[in-house]
Image (cartoon, rainbow, N blue to C red):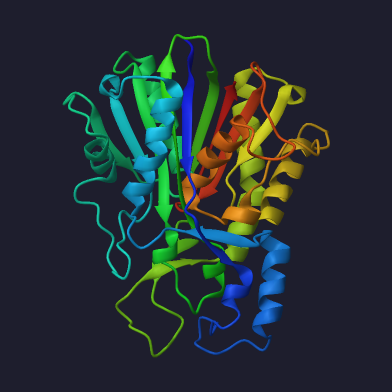
Length: 352
């Protein structure tokens, strides 16, 4: 049974925040003290490592479920399906709906249920639920949707990844410059003249690595100690990703039966440009090869790291010819890969 993606959609908010917009921020270390370097130097080093020049933030009136709905509408239209024929809606996120100016995430009801409501789907057999798997959540939801179709429980699934990380970042933390908002979605179906999932693999490393990404109070010692923000141990994550993700990708590719020379693109989680480059380089080194210059499309420069949304947004934009010097042809083999909170890793080998 061929199970493939028949439609994609994405939504990048129009609110653009550039690096220079952080020049007046009061960045503090975890001890509450200011850094020796100026903000100009901090931002310059940040751009050199991450590649990020600007990021997108959701406007005040939109929540994560709204972004997911906007991406889902486009995916449904792109696939040319009747929304009432959907069997599952799976929404991958990390923090639920965080309203502008509020300090709590809201997951009652689930974001997938909210999207179903916004889509005005009447079919009660269309099951909607959320996926919590860190940044690899969209890929993991894709793997689950494939399993539902493969075992006969579904014929059509809507898989969404969305986040509004701008509402859970500590303005006094340098890492706040990494995170952004956005959503991507796809329709997965069986038995048609379109792509095919060839293999997949997932891992959870929680023996000492579980809290590399976590929730904690602001770096400002005088700030509210009860409000929590996304925090990370950047060095640990970098080392972990470079040491584990390449082999996980290779394991997935080996299961597919496709040779490394047959891989046209790697759609990797847009987390950090230098880290992603290192992962790809090490991945190809496992096969005694050098990575082709055009194998890894990157749009982190303009959209930042919007977690679970990075891979579906990137795939949608490349698929539709919106990323310069990158495109896809029918029959191309690509890899989806991600790493994130948990610490979770996953990959999918996909023939377009």
